[in-house]
Image 1 (cartoon, one colour):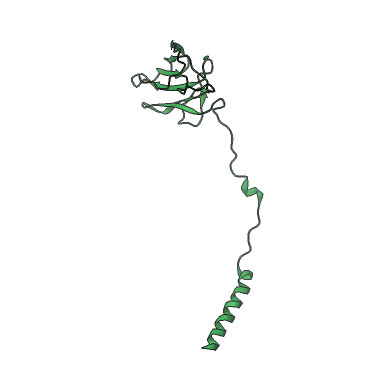
Image 2 (cartoon, rainbow, N blue to C red; image 1 turned 135 degrees about the horizontal axis):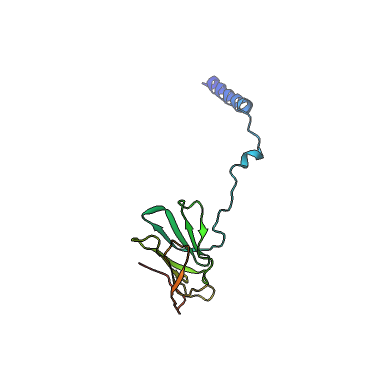
Length: 152
């Protein structure tokens, strides 16, 4: 029995000593492997927190997004590229967006994010577009400066 234990301990020691030499060598660090895909900014470029979003049920590739202090953005390719469509308006603070189900070219935007804090941008009412965001008209002036919700 003692001979068998001596054999096992010798075999274990020999295996432990020679194991590192029979294992494959560790790969070296190659910085080229970390280059991978390149990140690029595709927008929105004037943005912030998102407060409102709306999709068009009859056009699953079209979405609108409203930023608290970054205007309204539109995508027509399932969100791959976003385009600002509200930059010419006096208010960039958006609290609500809704798209008409019966006519997806009609969009309403409520300006003002809906939080009453002195450090946040305020809005000035409700805007309407009848041509899917190409042009806007100021349809209602709100002295409270906040429109957090809309429903058509």
